[in-house]
Length: 277
Length: 302
Image (tube, rainbow over all chains, first blue to last red):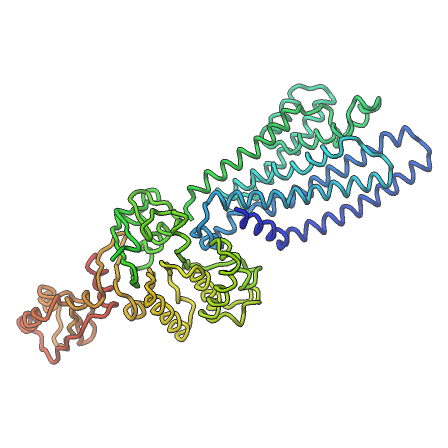
């Protein structure tokens, strides 16, 4: 398993999608830094502490929301073909007959890809956090927990995409994974609006989408971890808008997300063990 | 002699479509075994079942005395797939190092085996180049090097010379014969019947997923003969007469080629030609080539 793990981790660095994601991340971080720089400059000039306490956390959330989008983009594009592309090209035909179990191939690839994506997400989180800290001086508590949750996001999306790659073609698995990700994003917005206007149907629709794909709930949990309502009298204002979180996802949603990853890993193991190549 | 491969009723269905049906096959150690059949006959399905790429629907098999999927026995099995494809971003040496690690070889063994097999298949000069820069022939040689890495006791080769020029084919034949001399067993899937005939100790023919004949290629040819007839007045009636005493392989112009089971059937064939109104100018018999056996067996099933 360690051979496949090491190989997958190494292979991840050779893919073009990594280069694209790095360029995207660099462009994003550059724009983000510029935006934060000028926003902070204007707010400091106005000496408006109230405005700063509302806007600065919003800037952090904005960065994390779109950072999470970039990580998801890399996750789907780099995982969609993790099994299927090797089946399609025939590369795997020379690997399976070797003295290794199929489960070792799945576990090695899953862990190699998972560690790579989690590390990428953690680095992006650290970059966004560093920009906010150096420019605004705010240092939200719970950054370690938030970084872990931020790194869990790609693992959730990866687990589904991994199973799809085991079952179907690269194009099909990428397409379905993007659709599921879209469901999560739209569901997250709907739930946020439902929370603001206190509409139960909208909230339930959001919860259902979170059960199908819990990526957005993890993001909303990160928001709550970084900006806990009890710590700040104006947190209700901070939590308004598309990047906030009108209701805190329970700890069960984190448990559910972890079980979700494990369940899809088990399904991948199950189906790959029976797959005819 | 102990068996390298033994299968009992090995069967694979893809839904209602038959891949292989009740294959019983025994291959002794130290042999080169040729597995022949037309496209879609089930050759690759059979090999893929043996190397663990496809799960059999029913039946059983053992390789080197162990059941299918046995991890320890796989350490002594090499496989070159028909559609050889490898990680293109690696160099030839890195690729072999990866495969060596899959074989769980220690560093010393890798250090010794990798240059040895690269040299053996003739890709040492490109060891440091990316696989993506290799020609198709070089890739096939590299695939063969991967299969030879563990110094396998049992080697499965699916069309191992399909991308090679005549010189390359000869080199591969020499490698295979050399391996046999060292007691290795080689299971060879190939369309190149002349090649198979040159090196195989035993062959089996598969058609529509079932084995229709197997044996020593020499012996299989010995009980069959091809007779070439130079004739005039070839009519439908004459051909029917010939069919009553032999099986027609081909007919065109004034030449009819037929297969008979043995020499003793030749006089009866001549009588049939004459009684059918044919004017016989020449009659020559020859030993049946593997290709003739192959075609003849395929026609028998039609």
